[in-house]
Length: 139
Image (tube, rainbow, N blue to C red; front, side):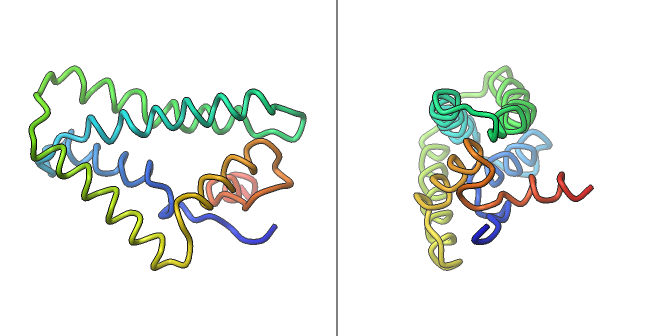
């Protein structure tokens, strides 16, 4: 393994944490667009992973982690039926830009992080190890 992709390098972790804060009324901007982007990427990655599924795949872990953390939060935010404002759209843009800048500062980039993640999920002997899988393996 080259190294470990830490959870702070996943935009979806940022989105889930922010969304929990929004649900708890700590943060003001509606994260529905961010959650939708995260779920669309999950579906995209899932399609690639299923197509390349093999005995070294981490498909079940990937599916469960994403499904458990994203779908219920999306449903809660969606069923609040709060409109998406122009400020929510601007906030969505800013979150993505800040995330890209953060990954660059951390000597990584969004493309490499998600490419390596998908490679690792397809075959645990390829790509970079994902921190959550590393932690689960060592329990």
